[in-house]
Length: 64
Image (cartoon, rainbow, N blue to C red):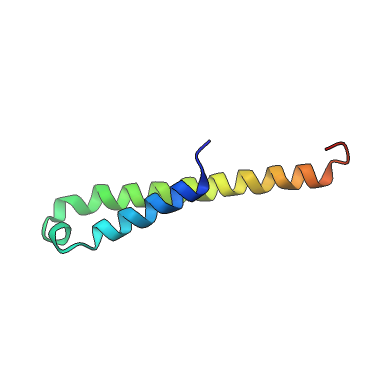
């Protein structure tokens, strides 16, 4: 499973790259970079949710 911090950093880095003037001039880069950023943010949400679910199960299980 991916580290949520790494996914967040990746999404933020992609966002920063998309804002660069050189990238702005090359519109063909926008779609794949936007898709990559969206993917990283969705994965971050999924992983964070799974981690939260696991923590909840552990907190509610008296045997752990």
